[in-house]
Image (cartoon, rainbow, N blue to C red; front, side, top):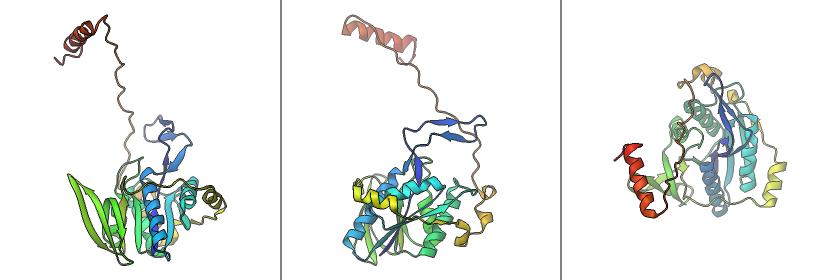
Length: 263
């Protein structure tokens, strides 16, 4: 089985992020990781490969040259090969364009199953996977929490739906997005890390995939960022004074009435 995993390199959750003066761009500290939900997708692909011995796992990302580090993480976990679709000079944030490029790669490379994370933790749009499936004309299931590769033709999946779970049988080829709970991603062994450091990761020009360059340029984006705004600052914490618990309760009620005016 040929398995492709779409991944994304995202800013570390502890990275310092500032809004630039024009409020149309971000300044991000140079701390990046493999997207949280994509780790579940990579792990599941490797588990399928371990049970179906003739399988191959290819990890692909559409991103800048630094995204190679995210691909190395996937190789260290156990992926067979990785490919960087270099988006330098092209639109990088519009999910429709990203999905079109990833779908073009999958169509050219060949696949039986595509896995990716439910969403990226930076933009949280959760659209790229389903959009890529539509471009490829294949079925897709989102937020998968259980996957059973019945054979090379059908997979049985369990996905989260509002108020419960849904069990489906999906005929391949198909695209599935991974949700937290699908598995526990492995910590790469030192042998895997060494393999990843030595791995030659090819860089592919997205324009070679058959997508017209005009459809990947910034002015082709259907979404325009008007501005970034920081979240509202939380009010300072107030300590309720009092010598005894009873006095503290009286002071709390007084503050709720006179200051917060919620009573």
